[in-house]
Amino acid sequence: MSDIATQRSTNWLAGAGLRPTRQRVTLASLLVGDGQDRHVTAESLFEAASDADEKVSLATVYNTLRAFCDAGLVREITVDGSKSYFDTNMTDHPHFYWEDSATLTDAPADELEIRNLPDAPAGAEIASVDVVIRLRRK
Image 1 (cartoon, rainbow, N blue to C red):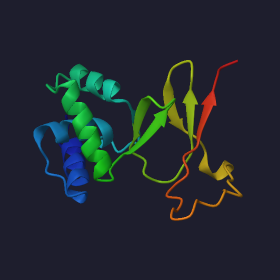
Image 2 (image 1 turned 30 degrees about the vertical axis):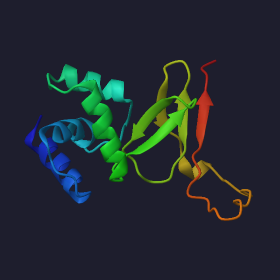
Image 3 (image 1 turned 180 degrees about the vertical axis):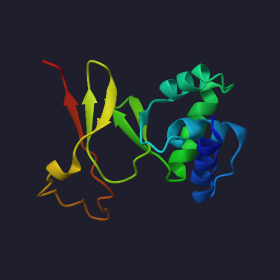
């Protein structure tokens, strides 16, 4: 892990008020250390940590991703009601879900137009609209 990645990760955590524990800094470095946004599953992040010879359990990865979500650092996108992806890009934007590779990528937000949402039921308000476009290769 480079000094720049560690510093970027520590700042990312501090900006959300999270204590920079060794595990958090390790996982944050894998998520945002290079300055790029990414979509990960807990399993893919665990694998990336293992590949980098970082000692962290899968349970710690799950717990850390949950803490990152709660702190507003990543957004959870659920596909098929069971598979969760975690996105470091916190802007409102749609996603492509590639069925053949089970990967999630950003879709161009400027090409999406959402109109005529139904009114929220009494006593509720629309918090957000998530758009996941499922793709299958021809």
